[in-house]
Image 1 (tube, one colour):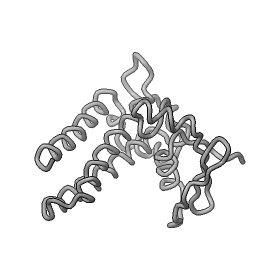
Image 2 (image 1 turned 90 degrees about the vertical axis):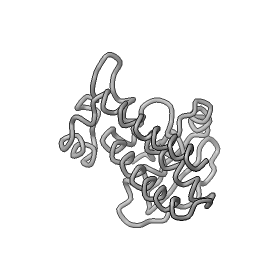
Image 3 (image 1 turned 135 degrees about the vertical axis):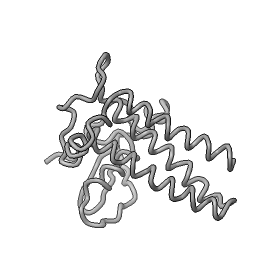
Image 4 (image 1 turned 180 degrees about the horizontal axis):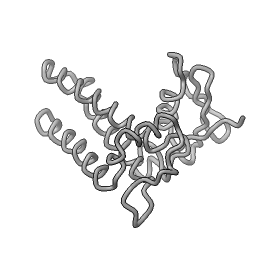
Amino acid sequence: MPIPYARTLAEARLYLALTVDEAGQEEPPVEGPEAWTVRSGGVEVLVPYASEAEARDEGERFGVGLSELIDPGQWRLAGAGYARRALADDLEYTEEPGDERLFQRVVSGWEAARDALGEALKFIPPGEDEVPAEAFWTEAGLAAREAEPECFLRDRLAEDIAFYQQNLDDFRRLNG
């Protein structure tokens, strides 16, 4: 079986977190001639230097174009997970204001939540209003769609992205 490709290191790390059953510790990326190899729990992912550079140039945390590793349901679930962590860190920061490391975790968490939903939104074809059924290929993604199909509508994804951005903006305004 060929080693799968991720668009960015961030996408590779998320893919491994979603894929590796055991609590395998991610190893540092190994440099190759044209790509990094990222490993965890015996699973490997390649990240081409060119796609990482393109994503950075475009300001796309998880990559330019559609993911071939993570389906829209998984992106939705990941966004919710990032948001839960950001909220917990935000509450902790309220108790310990001034902790720069914690401040950055909150900011990064809300950004990752917003960006993960942006990845799900990319699966909606131009002129359509929802993520098509055929875009879901994982068990977790299919279950997420079945449980809450309205969460994969263009308007709903845009609202939730705006909500995460508002939380980020409010946190920065109150604590920045």
